[in-house]
Image 1 (cartoon, rainbow, N blue to C red):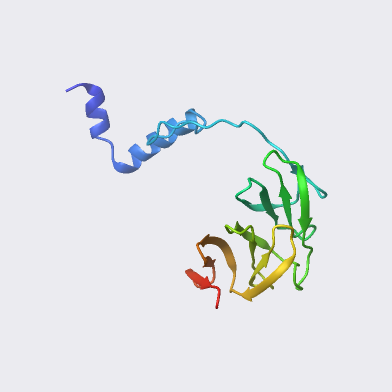
Image 2 (cartoon, rainbow, N blue to C red):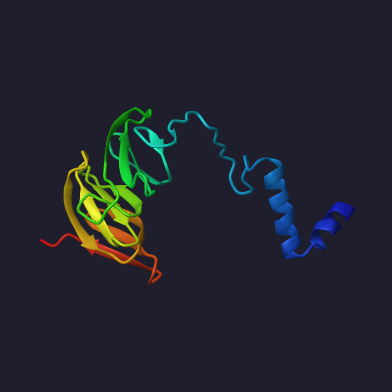
Amino acid sequence: MSKRFLLITSMNLSSILALVLLCLIATNGAYSAYAAEQYSLIEKWGSTGSGYGKFSQPLDIAIDSSGNVYVSDISGLSNQIQKFTSNGTFITSWGSTGLGDGQFINPSGIVVDSSGNVYIGDFGENNRIQKFDSNGNFITKWSVNNPVGIAINSNRVYVINQNSGSIEIYSLLS
């Protein structure tokens, strides 16, 4: 047996995990211990601030079937949704801070369905899901306790309820 083999086999699990972590840090996380795929930054847009194409605290992102990008911005200054083309050209925004329809306290999860409708989780004082068309026109809302994550599959809306630690599933009533 080689000394190298003996060194590795005599290490405990936490030492092996620490060694793997050090290897990943040494490569700036560019390589995975499990996959040969590599990614590199090809484009970047947006900046910190307020106004079109600027973000205070962007929290979530969704892409529709046309490639448009929706970003939820969770901040007392903005609390809005911004919509962009796939290359970052600003299209529109909607929302403001508040408790009314189309307003947000903490717009968190965001998802777009196959018809282009945008669903936004709003946790905190609002505790609800709001549904909009692709231009930001309010459609409906329903109460959900601390919705922090949201996904859609067919006609079902899956929501993470942070308070109960559960996944809640909603379906449109006929």
